[in-house]
Image (cartoon, rainbow, N blue to C red; front, side):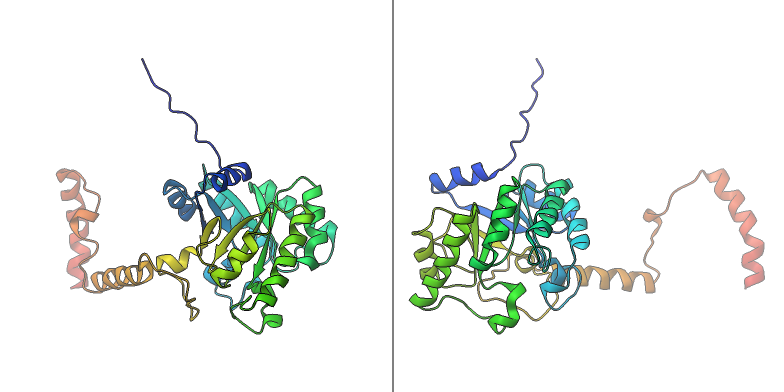
Length: 294
């Protein structure tokens, strides 16, 4: 009797809520391409965030504000093709939602059409109308508070946020504004663990962290940070490297280049064989040219 494996059950926002109820943290990681999405999905990641951090990790920009919707959608479609179980969330890039509700809905819808199960945008009270418009359009939407890279100019650079009780209260007010606008979750970035706990205790939202300590409903990391493949000078305190893919990649290419220059590659085992009779004909045909060349 043949056994048919059960279809993989896709992670949804309801799945994430159930994880919180059971006290199990959700595992988030960024992904920007098909192979990373496949590997992360196989490894059991619950959520793949197609972050606007692709501007820096994939395109070499100095900040996240340079990436466009068209570029984000290319990365998103690739990730969605690779994710069979994980929930894919699209990160709405700079100026894709700020100008108007209509633009926010249209661009959020483009992420959904590309295969996302939800979208993320930065800000609290000031973007609450956009969150409400997107949610009213039937799209799951989450917020992002604390260190918000699209607002670095206002924040004064990459600085820890929410370091005082008063600052934590401001972040809480923003989180409550997102909750009231219909968001299902919020991501807290680069804030003290105490501030994250303070917020999580006072909202009904799912609360996730990237550099926000352990008192949240799950952790997000940038794939290039934990794999050791980010090219740049930014090295957040909260990052733990689990591999050195960048160094391994560079060394592999150095070894390849050395073999090519020393005529060690391609070796006979890398060439397609032919029959002895055909090989003899080739040698006969090639010999005069070799003699002339010599």
